[in-house]
Length: 92
Image (cartoon, rainbow, N blue to C red; front, side, top):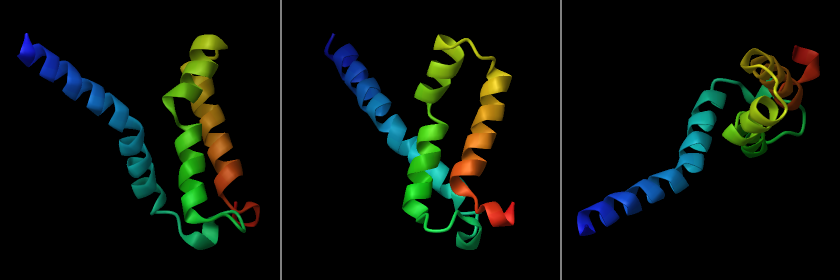
């Protein structure tokens, strides 16, 4: 029984660390975008946080599960939202 409790605790820790892991993953992806392509005045850290929010499971759940949009609609919305929020309009 103690072994099961340990495993459950490890799963809970992993679950709690998922958002940080995802944010770090988003940061690595955004490293490919040069600072000059970001919206004027947008810092890299704010860009990462913005992307983290837009591509979150929570956003997906709200739009697809609660509002009954299709997964394809979510992909389209996500792409448009990321472009509008992160990229310099002059460079698009």
